Amino acid sequence: MPSPTNQYGHSPDPASPISVDELMERCMGSAAVAALLLAKFEHQAKSDLSSIAQELAAHNVAQIARLAHALKGAAGAVAVAGVRDAAAAIESHARQSDLEGVSHEIAALQQEIDRCLQHIPAAKAAIAAVCANPPSLSKNAGVEP
Image (cartoon, rainbow, N blue to C red; front, side):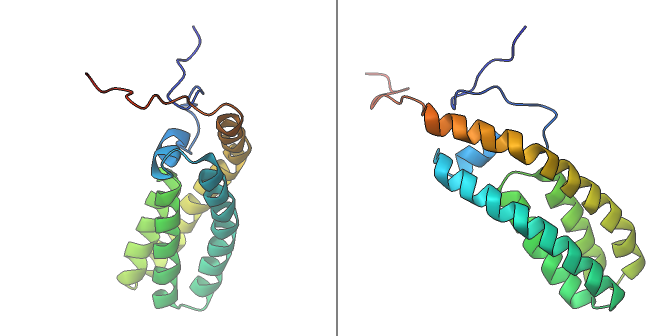
């Protein structure tokens, strides 16, 4: 049985770490904004992970906390809960000056980022489909006379 389509005209992929529906809601239905945020997140996730690893080697917990906090916010904005949660764990360990905990959580963050990056093409395709076939919204949709 095929998956039902949503208000944006696609079937959500339950295996994807990216919730395209939540992303579209956060972008108020703008596929262009969603695609832009996703592209920026793709770059930021790679860059922040590398920077967190460098700061861990330098034992700079304040910078680790700042980077993890920024990544947590970016992941939340694009509806990538796994990356958001892993970044939050790193931020928490860094704020407690727990470098061993940060080191342990980096593997989970790497795994979630890799998983997310693998799904970005499918998410971009779903967003592009919305651009090609925007949902038709009636002026009085959902409003009883």
